Image 1: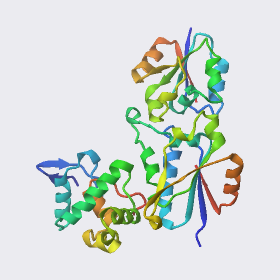
Image 2: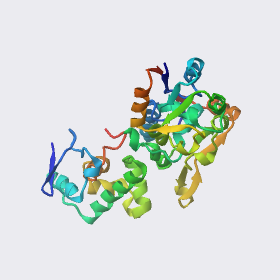
Image 3: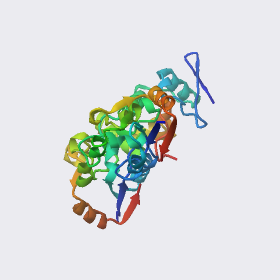
Image 4: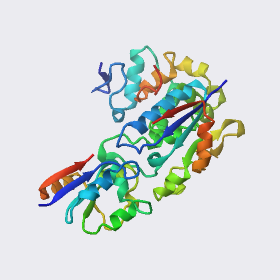
Length: 100
Length: 133
Length: 110
């Protein structure tokens, strides 16, 4: 059993990303979408959270990162997916938990 | 007597409608000849990032509109320094916004004012009207 | 009402503004002008082209006040006043010229 978690809120103005990390199990996937993509940027106060969570697979929705002009600031090792990749992730996991 | 109007922007663009709504109100409000300024704090600083490309999300890229603010005589744009730093950003990551001074042979002047939290608190305190987005 | 130009039909909104900015071609401006008994001169085209360039760069149709000032800077002081612009576009430079240019109605223009 493996879950896909999606987070669509900025980590700087909401505790949604933390709430997700609190319950995401080892081996699950966290996909950052919409304003959630800012959690995947480096050089800031939340960057360590992804860096220190090595047993979770972090992904970012590329179109949302491009829209916000942060594609060049994404942390190393974060997988960028497009909408098709989003669908694949949903299909590959047993269920989806959308953290709103 | 012109009043001091400040638009306080705290939300990132595209995820919610706040940023675009604020911009529209600023443009409409600019017709009323008041002393207008904008503040970007918290995630609001993300509204001004360079290189926004919204083709893939099917929304209008409204980031070019910020560079027209000078034409609308909106020439004071305050960016909170701490908010930028918390997000690992510097002024180089943001658009360079300028206005042209008609009374000074259209000389280009900087619109952006990088201010500390304490300085911004004073600027806020000095306003007649605050509009929050 | 859709507008006919160059043998093609283009969609407009209920106020006659072109539905899709990218559909625009000069014949549309001519057709829109003819429908309002207006013959486009070089002076009209200066403003129409200016508006299209402005939109291309800033993604907004400028307010009349902004247009007036910008025209004055680009095309000369004698053209950067509302008398000149209203003579060219008696229905209002914002409304009429933006419409011919295929732009949306300027923000804040009622």
